[in-house]
Amino acid sequence: FRSSRPFAVWREMTMTLQSPGDGGKICCTGVVISCTGNKHTGYHVSMVLTGLSRQAQARLSAMAYPPL
Image (cartoon, rainbow, N blue to C red; front, side, top):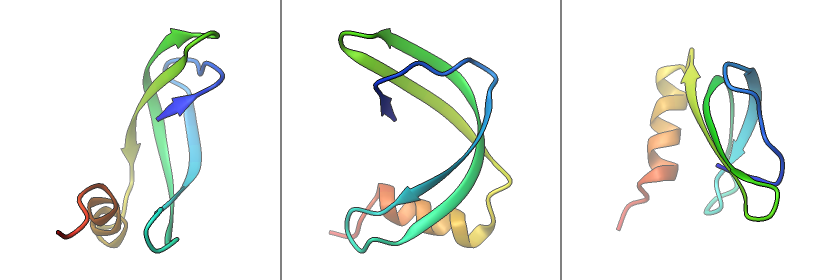
């Protein structure tokens, strides 16, 4: 995701993702594995999500790859 502020690598975070389509939400926990960029252009944060239920995985997949 994009951020206006940096995040420390290996930081564990809990966040809520919201679908722009139907407004559905997924609460998840993950670990920051990369944070690149600067204060002028913003930061690109990469995370590994941990402990997702099968239902949350399916919901996340539907958010990432909406049906045509």
